[in-house]
Length: 90
Image 1 (cartoon, one colour):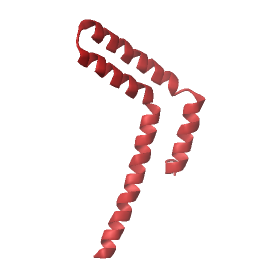
Image 2 (cartoon, one colour):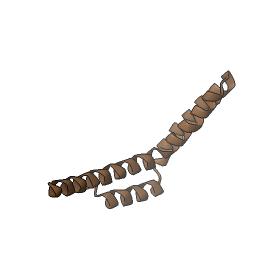
Image 3 (tube, helix red, strand yellow):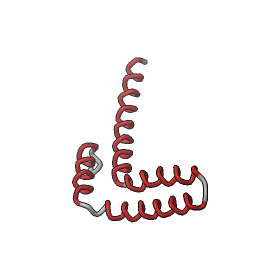
Image 4 (spheres, one colour):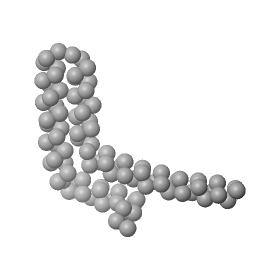
């Protein structure tokens, strides 16, 4: 019975390792949009028409930055390191 618990714990840690790598890769790829969304939400929560327009502009700029970010050489280098570290290509 202890063996099954240890085996289950090892399998759980492997699954956790994989999901951590997937989360890291997702956040690295969508970082400008995630940050822009947080800032936009803050402006929306402040209220008012001007803040809503500012939030919309920030969100649109964040989408554009995300598209250009995913074409940069730094993005590709770090993404390759993440894929090697978490064995996503196997």
